[in-house]
Length: 154
Ligand code: HEC
Image (cartoon, rainbow, N blue to C red; front, side, top):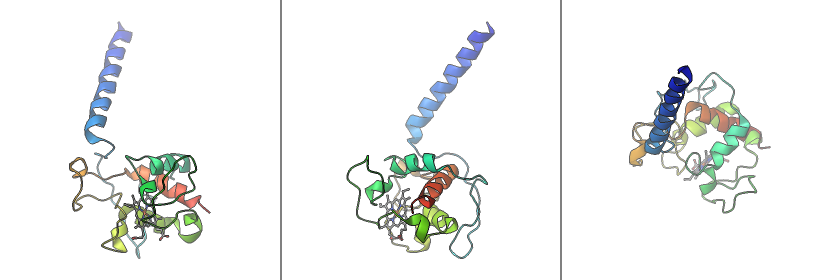
């Protein structure tokens, strides 16, 4: 009896996730965390936790998440057709600090208002798809994961 109840709860939860997933389509509905910008860098982890570079690589490749390959050549041999709009990202860990990369991921527009590079952790942007209104493209932890991955590129 207990088990049946649990099963019903679990499948309701799974259904909820499936529906929410279908609606938000990769966009994040969670509350935005606050962070401090210091000299065009974000020194502290958005989540207070370290990023996971393996998860970050997946988020970067995912066409519905980072979609970095649309614009950047990256050391990701299993995927074809890397974009050439932005610079090659094969040595970001040598050229940037973590704090600098976090700022670029959160909001590249700080450096150049007209850049093509999306602001991955910002709401209220201009000309966003309906599904992203009031939402960020990546979650705070996904930003941390991608930053951790970029730091491994040397
Ligand atoms: C729509 C195109 C586009 C997408 C998608 C995109 N970028 Fe960019 N990115 C750019 C452009 C263009 C620049 C060049 C600098 C500028 O215009 O600000 C750039 C610059 C950068 C830089 C600084 C590199 C340097 O050498 O100056 C980093 C790091 C970066 N992007 C990481 C990423 C990551 C990681 C992703 C995916 C999560 C991503 N970008 C997705 C267009 C894009």
